[in-house]
Every structure is written in C-alpha cells, then in structure tokens.
Length: 247
Length: 167
Image (cartoon, rainbow over the protein chains, first blue to last red):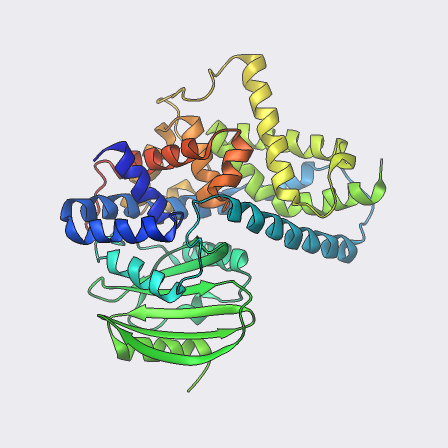
C-alpha cells in the first residue's frame, strides 16, 4: 500500500475524514479486500498503543516527582479548581471553533452519528481486535482515561456484560464533539461497541432497532448520547438494559 | 509574582505529573531522563507562573514548556541530532513495562515504538494518548496538518509491520 493510502486509512481510523471522503473510502473498502486487510493491520496497533500509554501513566514515579516539587503554603484548592474547570470549558469552545475551521473533522454538516458508528462497525472484524487481552488494571486505566475525556462516569464493572470481553477504548471526533468507542468481543471474537457522544444533547429514552446486520440501542442523558451495537439483538438488549440500569 | 496564579499552577502541576512524565519519556526514552525533564518543566512553570493565562489549559501550557526545554537541551548538548534521528540501540524503558510486555502483541508494538523517530513518537503521544486534534498537534509542533497526518500513518504502518495478530 502507498503512503497516501495509509494516510487516508489512518485519518479514517482517527475519525478525521469529512463525511464525503469517509463515505467514498467506505465504498472502496467494501469493494477491495486488500484495502480492508490494510485497514485491519493499521487498526490493530491502536489497542496495544493505548495499553502502552496507560502502562506508562501507571509506571510514572509520581511520589518521587511530587516530593521534589517546591514546598508551598496550603492553597485555596476549591477556588483554583473552579477556575481550572472554567478554563477547560473555554478551551473546549476554542477547540470547537478551531475544529470548525479545518476540513478534516468527521462531519462538516450534521449527519446521523449512529450511522457513522454503523459504518465503522462494518469495518471491524474479529481480526481487528484479535490479540488484545488487557488485564484488569490496564482496562481500568484505559476506561478511566477515555471516560475522563468524555466526562462520563462509567466503571469497567458497569460496562462489562457476561460473555463480552473488553478489548480497547479510544476517542474519535464527530462533528466537533468527542466520540468514545469502547470495543468488546464475544467468545467468537465478534466485535461489539459501546459508544458515547458528548455533544450536550437533550435526554432521549431507550430506543432499539435493527440496521442491516446489526442491532442497535440508543439513549441519551446528562448531555451525552449513548449507543450499543452488535450482531446479536439479545446481547444488545441485555447490555442496553444493564447500562441504563433498567430491569 | 501573582500569588493566586502561582497557587493555581502549583495546584494543577501535581495532577499533571504522570502525563508530563509520559510525554518526557516519549521524547527521551529513558525513565530517569524523563524524570529530570519533568522536574525542569515544573520548576520553569512555577518560575513563570505569572505568564500562565487563567482560564486556559494548564496541561497544554506545561506541555509547551516541557517541549521547549527538551528542544533547548538538544541544541545545547548536541547529544541528539533532532527530528528524524533514530537511536535504534535505545529502547523505551519504565517501571511497569514488564507487565505490559506479558501481552506478546503489546510487547512487539512497544519494541517498534522505541525504534521510531522522535518526531513520530511525539506526534503519536499527542494525538493518541493526549487527544490533541490534528490541528492542535500541528500548532503545538509548528508543522502543517498534512505532516501530522503522514507521521501518524507512518507510525501505524511501522507498528503494524510483521505484527502477529492471531488471537
């Protein structure tokens, strides 16, 4: 594969292609097994990379570095944190404005985020996440990092459904908003996704549907949209009810 | 010096330490060098706390300081030769690496990551670990967005090469 193809596939994997380019690449992937194979190969490195980055955080000599910081008087922590939180909001707004100026983000115009997830899902095969078997500590570190960026409170225990194994999680961008993907696989390696779009949208009741080969469940609360997707309607139904806290 | 701003920087510094160290590790590839670079960054940030603009992201300001110190070190001691220079004999080492390396796939990727040029490792860290958008990474690294894209593609291609992906 050429460098240009790798760059295109990487932008797709990173969620940085605009809707028309994304749709065109999805069409080419569907028609070209060797392109799909390259997509799988490039996709496969993200999980181990995330494991390594999480492992580095866990291995940081924090106590030693903290001890070496200059001593200071007790700080007005709550005040400082409030200001810092305001800073994050401002930075997020500036970031959104910047994102709107470049053509490389997903979207460009509003389209259905669940359909974008379906399109990504079609590309994921058992091969995509093969070999990823993070231990509990790594899973907690990855889930913690991704949920922190999305502003959601989800623990690995809450996410897990019997029969589905956690594989990896990462954050894409959809229409300027963070889109978190948590990838799982059943015993046969078939991928399932739990996705969160942090776009400050209105609450939505649980809705289930079938789209092509996939069952989907969507709901919205606390300014986030949630989605679970996979081939088995039974698994999706169970998972959605577990995650929404229903019976 | 504005005491409030110094307090704000010192408050925020502690929670950023692991991420600063990880960035430093990706640049230096050695745990103790990363620790030194992180410490230098903290001291410089406290010295220059009055330059921090309240309401902006402290973590990104700290990352800029860390990068600036790193680049100055390269220029002054001439031990390294800048972007693109590969020191294949050095591998990324840190406490906890053994735990990661129990997964064969991850161990393979860590080894390949060590051998990547600094510029590629740094770009991968900013985008994949820190969540910078392509535009934000380009601004931080002072390079075109296209270069960010080609570096990330090169990272994925290099890490994927000959990777054993069977379960």
